Amino acid sequence: MANEAQSKRWNDDQWAAAWPKRERLTEAVSPYLLEAADVRTSERVCDIGCGGGALTVAVARAVAPDGHVVGIDISAPLLQLARRRAAQSGVPNVRFVQMDVQTTPLDEAPFDLAVSQFGVMFFDEPTMAFGAIRSLLTVGGRLVFACWQGVEHNPWHVGTALRPLLPPPLVPPPGKSPAGPFVFGDDEYVRDLLGAAGFVAVESTPHETTVRAPADAVVDRSLLQFMGVAPEREDAAQAVVERHLAQFAVGPDEYEYPLAFRIYEAVNP
Image (cartoon, rainbow, N blue to C red; front, side, top):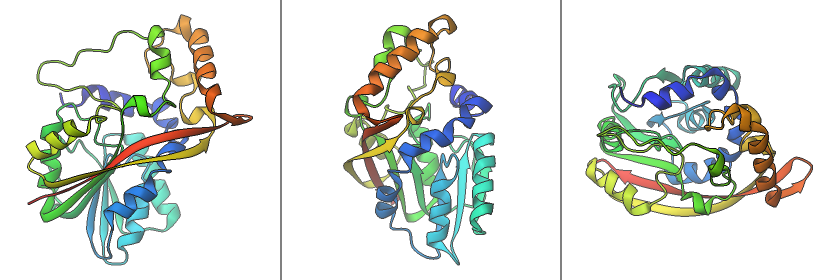
């Protein structure tokens, strides 16, 4: 089954309910992605791994009144959030679809542009996935996405600090690749994937910024077990998290996190 582990995680109600807290980090990246995407009125756009739909709604506003946007995600609960946001924003030119773009065709293709904000690092067969995304685009259509630089450039992430309390990482089954927030930290690897999928004119631009947010924008106790912490070690893990985040503290439950990411652009020839 394609992306089985990620589908299970992102369709868990508790995990999905915590997502809006995480958006304090991702929304800081949206202006960079929107600038690179250079979205234009009347374009047809798909948002890959759209999550709660904040970026999708912003793109829909940019292509209005004649353009149309489709947000795609594997998470049913996050798509419910996305639909509520679109309705509350009064944006009519957007639709959300639950599907795995790695394996499922989309009848509304082709699109002029595909965007993704931290949604493409979770494919377990990334070359196939990028090939599927390319098949959604018109000739000359563009792909623009944001992904994190390596975890060593994103010290806000608590995974390294928690490593002594976590089980060893699972080895992917034969034919599958690791998936996760930092798997695209190697620029050469990402360029090779895009080239193997048939994209050309690949460009990447590194960026750094900071964002102020509370501790639960990074992790909260309710998610420690999802990260692999055993129940009997939660107290110790929570103490590790608090010590780790203390280096970013600027006030009571307010932290300034340094974010390092890349914006990739590529063309379907």
